[in-house]
Length: 334
Figure 1 (tube, one colour):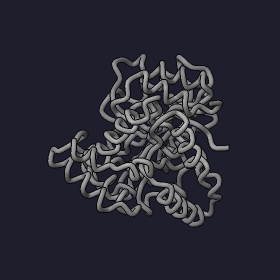
Figure 2 (cartoon, helix red, strand yellow):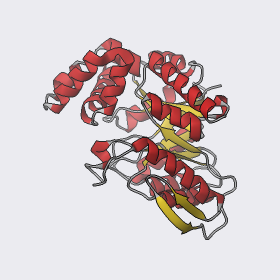
Figure 3 (tube, one colour):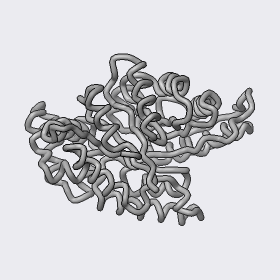
Figure 4 (cartoon, helix red, strand yellow):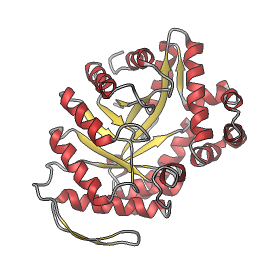
């Protein structure tokens, strides 16, 4: 059965308590895990530690931390500490992000993202084993690092994100899971073929690589209002977050719309960009409308063979009432 998880709001909330409140609500509604996306708001480690303190059983995880702004040794230390602090509830999701974030925000060169991600997975696994890390990679060289405390038991699983064929193949070959974002039903099926190919290359069982599909959701009694909020969210991602969401959408057969939305947003015409997200594209990428409509669309995505968990994400402009209404609409027992 497909697990129901929660992708905590990307937009910064008024307080750290807003995130812990959402996590507590998700736990009460029976969700399996909450994921924290580290972007330009609060950092993931502090936020997830606070969530662990205020919950009892729900899993916690990063979706994602990037592989440039922290060293792999520090990512491993952080994963080990969060696994200890949460008493085994942590799962690490990481990935390269994109040039707009890495070069623009963090001032680091965005180079060879797939190779870098692979090396991070390998180094973090070594850190979590408790053994000394002596690693001589193409991108990263490190010597002599070892955790001072006992390694976590069990070690947390390591997921990676990716949108293109080679990135998803890498997840199947080296990681414990893959996080998928901004896909249509046909689009994710195509990438799941890449995941299986990667698993074959790594002599692994593809069924043991957990696929988490991050699905924009918005459920309100006023279905049109829910759809408008979601339209704005999708236009921001395609138009305002660099080129990779645009390119991923183009690969899925929506090139004209992807380019038009991106160009309008980059030209500063955000209203036009939002208007270019028509009903067909909205329904292809999200579950938005009345609670009944959203539950039906959510279930259609959850039924895709190879999807192990669906993470409910929320429009950037969603307020606490919208978030709570959406959580209730697609809760496991709804």
